[in-house]
Amino acid sequence: MSSRTPKSRHLLPRAVLLVPLLLSSLATAATATAAAAAAAAADNEDNSALEALARAEALKVLPAPNDRQRLQVGPLPPQVRLAHCEVPVKSAQAPGLQVQGRALIELRCDGHSPWHVYIPAKIVGTTPVVLAAHAIIAGTVLTAKDLTVEQHDLTALPQGYLDDPGIAVGMTAGRAIAGSAIITNQELIGMQAVQHGQTVTLVADAGGISVRMEGRALTDGLVNQRVKVLNLSSGKVVEGIARSAQVVEIIF
Image (cartoon, rainbow, N blue to C red; front, side, top):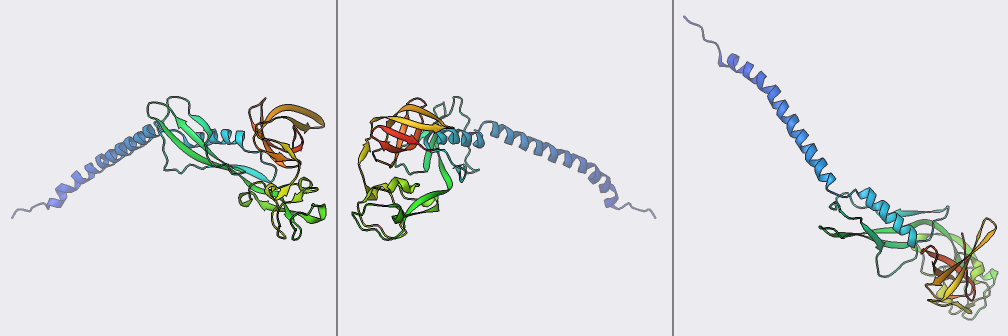
């Protein structure tokens, strides 16, 4: 009576031989996938490099942060992948409504596959803000007793807020101001000092040395009010205090 070897005994060696082949195929597929991902990444712009370019542009148009503040740019969402631009990417502040402490930076590729993207930038942190110490009647000439100063979040401040009570002292309240309300340029009446488009002298005190530069006013301003000025030497937009006709003091 002859004995028969079970089929499983013949199949087992073949299965053992197939395992290395299967593992080798999986490793090859994984390598090909990684290579394809690396090639795709090489064809795209580096998001961190784009954010750095937007940061450099934002520093040109926003006031320099102080020790209580920092500049926040972006970030670009990870899913945003822009094709590599074969020419230098251009950066500029996007046109439209400008909000103090914020800017929208446009990055543009004018290459064979053009694209553009907007990256928000803002100064975050706190700053001293002038508030009404009590309810103020319209027509009141303000004194130091009418004012108080508190630290406020920059992202929640109205346009034209004051960061120095000395700016408001001696000016007249053009309307009634509620107690504890933030005081802004628009609520005060004073002598006109600077007009939009006017050539002014920028004065800055750097380490005890007075530096004077020529600038062009970008906003109207009363005496002791904050105004924006284009520094004609550097091309940068700076903020200062209109101290008199044609003189704007830059505060560091």
